[in-house]
Image (cartoon, rainbow over all chains, first blue to last red; front, side, top):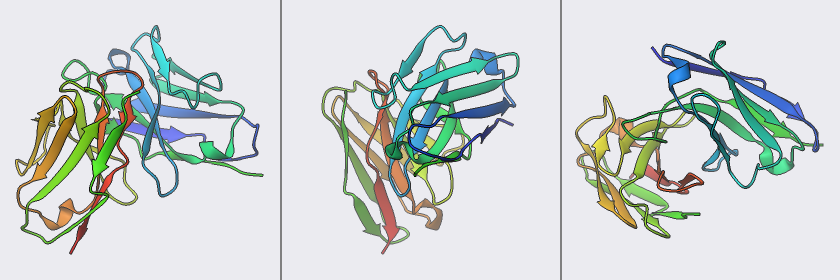
Length: 121
Length: 107
């Protein structure tokens, strides 16, 4: 069965950095586009970034462009999100999500349980 | 950027009733509209993709319709487990965007 397990969240001061990881299992990781989506406490969903199967195509939300970097290691079946210059408004639960693929590119059919990032002084 | 506006913000209904949730796009999303369900403390669950196709394992009481700028999610007869928050998402153009959500609560 598909499993996505995020880690790396925690408390950090404004301007600091964190690296999130998402360990994937139960599917052929290298064959799928992967996403990061976040949810501020009590708020709705916000798409953050996407990386295509071989890492050759990447897109970011404007709110994180230039500060966050998405990456993947297909040999380790792991997705990453490097977050720099963190701001209070980046405080959220960060989900990694698997793309549905050719049936409907960029529909998200499996999600992890999320890792919480808190940015506060 | 395509802005998605969901209505109503909150919908209060009883089990057995029919629920209709709306998602309106600021510009055409073609048929590339997706619906998710999220329960407290859980990750979102994919319900419907490409406006009207049910995802694997989703009960037939869930249906989606629409194209262009106006979309709807219908739950034909509410079960107790259907009370949750529902989000729409578009995949028509970058960036991917979500609506703000509709909370479906028990009346």
